[in-house]
Amino acid sequence: MSNKNKKLRSQGWFGGMNKRGFLHRSWLRNQGYPTYLFQNRPVIGICNTWSELTPCNGHLREFAEIVKKGVLEAGGFPLEFPVTSLGETVMRPTAMLFRNLASMDVEESIRANPLDGVVLLTGCDKTTPSTLMGACSVNLPTIVVPGGPMLNGKFKGGEIGSGTFVWQIKEKRKRGELSDEDLLEAEICSARSSGHCMTMGTASTMACMVETLGLTLPGIAAIPAVDSRKKALARISGKRIVDMVKEDLKLSDILTRQAFENAIISNAAIGGSTNFIIHLQAIAGRIGVDLKLEDFDHLGSKIPLLVNLQPSGEYLMEDFFTPEGCRLCSKRSKTTCTCTP
Ligand code: FES
Image: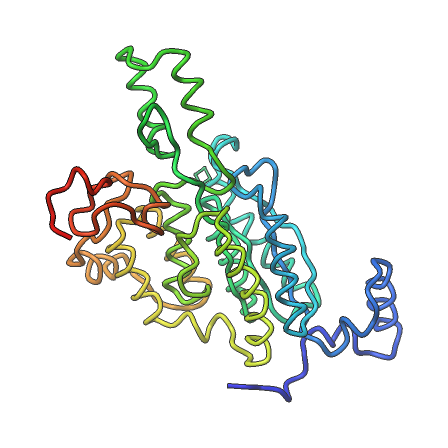
């Protein structure tokens, strides 16, 4: 797979002994980077959807620094850049209006800059498909680091799922089952850590989608944002993207028809969001894979549902990653199940 003789794309900016080469090298140095860091080394763009207006992605500044360490360890040179971040919780009327606009931002930011590979830092619902759609249109070696879900919400001795509970509030208030005090208590108990919604909503679905498409390191999607294992895999992702540049392993090499089929089957097994269909088709369109609505039916409709997660079930992403209790009947406490160990 190695393609060591291929000239690095970034050297089209940094390699010339002319006015342009001078300009590109000289101005990058004003940040304190010695020239050897970006000459003949894979330059890796860290495409960051961090924003304080996207609380689900609020920890991605820290993650960018972690990924950079991995890039440097592997002999690459990381350069972080911001892109449009779409947060579901505060944007009006809906973040979906801006998904394609955000994807154009990502596409042009990658295409116009001296990058050999890209790491997409994603989290809240639309930040995964928007960045991936943009990256697909440029088709460089690319790896995704999903930011991970929040820890389970805890309220009055039970657990509350970020998305699911929000939809229950209106009905509970109408029925008088949730006092003002309880409402305020629930809102500070449901977001216990950094990360995105911890139900199998769109954000978790998108994280699983990119993993089953083959665009992440294995096993990263469900790890909570604050779990040290997430940070370790973010660092290794930084190392991996440098190798992917050396291998010239582009998105189109990974995103085959089979990869999309794998994602559809996996999504059916985990009970992922129906938004999966909208976003996967858009991604397939960008990379040139013909994916029809019938494919989702044909491939997914006979797949058994293997997990029991909100909103269709009971549990949350933290349980999906580290199930507790009985693994036979899924009861949370071994003391309430009658299965023999
Ligand atoms: Fe961001 Fe749910 S609001 S993932």
